[in-house]
Every structure is written in C-alpha cells, then in structure tokens.
Length: 409
Image (cartoon, rainbow, N blue to C red; front, side, top):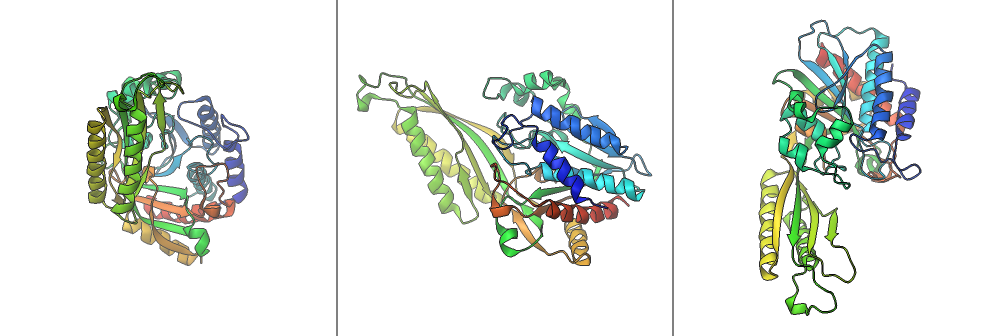
C-alpha cells in the first residue's frame, strides 16, 4: 500500500525547487520555487484522480470524493514553504505522506463516506512575511486586510502584492474561511525537529499537546548622530537599548520555567553604518510555553523591561503582535486510533508534547486534530543537515492511512 520509493521520489523532487541550490532548501510563499513545487504536486494529485483546487488564500487541495459529497471532510497534509536554507523534510514530509495515503486509497479501491482532502498549506513558517501559520489561519479565522497590506518581505513587497503576482486576489482572501462543521478531522504528519525519538529508538511520536506561541516585532527609535563627535552621555543609541532588552528576554525566559523558551532571531539596524549611532533597531521576539498563563506573564515582563530601558535612555518604541496562538490539546480519539494501529503493526511509539508550532494547532479551533512525529536524525531541523529516513515517514503514513479510514467511514 504505502510505497517508500514513491515517498523518496516526491521528497527528492521537491528538494530541487529551491532558491539556494547546494545550501539547503529555501522555498518561501508565493515565489517561483513554491510555484514549481505546487505544479509538481498538482500533477501528482491529478494523476491519481483527485480534484485539484486552490482556495482564496493560496492553499492547494486535492479532493477525493466520498459517498456523501456534503459530509464534513477528513483533511490531511502540511506545508511546503521553508525557512532560509532549511531542510528537505520540514513540512514537505507531511504533504508527501498525505499524497501517498491518497495513492494507497486509490489503489485499494476504498470508498469512504466522508470526502478526503490532501492540503498543501502556504506560509506556515512565516519566513517571508514574518507572520506564520498563514494558510491555516486563513481557513479558521480569516486574514485581516491590515495583514495583507501591512506585512512585507525583505524587498518591501507586501503580502497582497506577492499574492497578486502569484495569480491570486488578496481582496478575496476571507473566502478561504471554512464553515464550522465542514471539517471532520485534520491530521498532520511532521518530522520531530528534536532528538527525543531517535535517542529513545522509538519510531513514532503521538502528540498530545502543542505549545502556545507569540511572535512580536519591536522597533526601538533613537537618533542617528555622528559616531566621532557625539559624546556618550548625549547619545540616543537604539542598538544599545535593544541589546539590553534582548539580554533581558533571555533572562526572563530562563526564569519562567524549564518549558519556556524565548528567542530573538531577527535584528535590523538602521542606518547600518560603522560611523553613525544607530537610530532604529527592529527585532523579533518568539516566546513559547505549554501554559497560556506563563506566556502572558512572560509578555508582561518583557513589556515592562522594554518600557524601562527606553525611558532611561530617552528612546521610543513600538510593539507589534504578529502571531498569537494559545496551547492546544490534540484529539484523544485520534490518539487512540493511531496508538492502536501502532500496536497492531508492532510499531514503537510514545506520547509526547510538541515544542514547535504547526498548522494543527490552528486547525484545532475548527476540528479535532491529530499530530504525528517521525524521528529527526540528530534532532536537527531548519538547516541543510535536516534528515528523516524515508522508511520512518512510510511507517507514519501507514498509521495515518488506518486513521483516515477509521475517521472517513
């Protein structure tokens, strides 16, 4: 049923669609590389008889009809966009597994009551426009006009402009919202992106909960002055202020608890000259925890530190929330179905939390969700060295094939 060689072919083909050949996979939303990957996946979907369509947000679907066309769909898939110089498995493994499950269903001639949809989410990483989980948010909550016109890539292109160039109409993006009750379940297979499964010699991780995430963009403003003629006490150095806040973020996250993480991964300094005092610094803050009350407490402490630093140094600042997704639990019924399938097939598994964010955490507001992990070699991800054995992806696909059949009947 599930064929490892097809999984290998799909993933190796997708890995070729990158803006950085030889330096990992760089495939961002609404780019020529994403178009190439989508064209390949569309061709594969059509070849097995799926009805292919793209929603108003740019998510790609392959639909397999059910005996009751109007019944809620069982949806499975992941994303194909990447971070800069990322790996070939993050997101893509889940898309390929979903495609392979659809192939197996066709070959088995299995008729289901509920329609089944393979989904290829777009802009999950947020690497181009800074606001991740875009495709799933578009289906669940809808995307605001402010996000479409007010988020930009490094070249100053807005999300709306990028969509138009991609052949989509940003003014219709809210048409992507799915009605409550229209999705029976959402299943996502993903590489673990951590070392736990490999270290334990376990083949499958069945996720019980997904961490909450907040992504913030802070801009600190000071004054651009001559580096040689402006005395130290008279400077309004935005970078010095930012460095104090960034150091505090690290301390606050460490003190919040062992399950809390805080990261500043993006820093922009203007005017960016060696002989000019920095006038503006923009940086990102990503903090996560499994408890929403901890996330809120960390946010309050960071805001307090930011205000104090800027007041003391005569600086101003802005605080822009780009993403806020609370922690979620996956569906116990789906956990039981997958665990039973693993026991029946004698596949080792463990129940575990997810420290990374995934589209499943957003889709949980629309339908019951399942999230399944397969091992990452050395725990590495978001880098060219990212690797997951094709055989492990096939094992995960076999378990989700059982789950799809159970849920779609």
